[in-house]
Image (cartoon, rainbow, N blue to C red; front, side):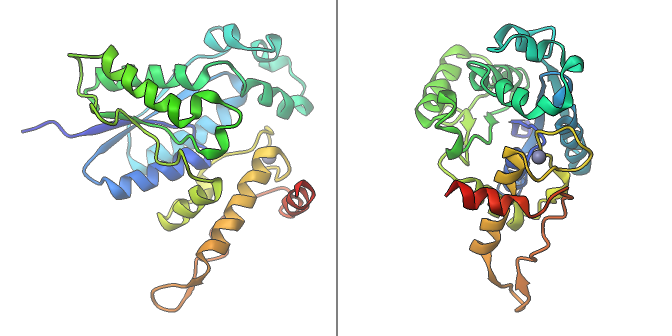
Length: 261
Ligand SMILES: [Zn+2]
């Protein structure tokens, strides 16, 4: 019997990686998807809970790699102290601190390198990551040229080991896609939005006002508009209540988007 093909998914529990997972499962039902999350420290715990929830729901293996406050995150943090002692950070500064945490140098390359190591160890053929077009401006290690170079490096660096695909060891299905496209895929593939977490704030429900909440709501709205029309049985499609996520403020994003234009 031949070994089942498998793929290691870099999985945050956010909308992007969860949408990608639902899409990949539909397109490649024969492949086993193993989920890999990275723990940067306390403030990301919420997202990881959502990642674990989806993993359990879909019956997939889920591992969380700790690169948190005493390790890599601290050493790479441009701002130093904000990541070191998360318990001492006032709640009101969560958004700002989290933004700083997102500019950790070389982060995507580091995560991909770790995921590729796991993939080779498990004889997986690829690693999948949900980087998208909106990431390009901010993060050079999310751009197509970089992914191509990293793919070549992965194959050279593991020659004779594992089963990495010689042509596509790193899957990036959203690399030239917008956030709205990702939301559209999520709707079409039946992803429950409420199983994903995007908010920078540490509240019990999405705040609806931080940068990622606004981006999420705008993308879902755009996706609904793009998909608007009748379903196979003339029912309205998609259901405009497809997003069951609870937001503390459901209207703020419209104003924020209008102001940004
Ligand atoms: Zn928020």
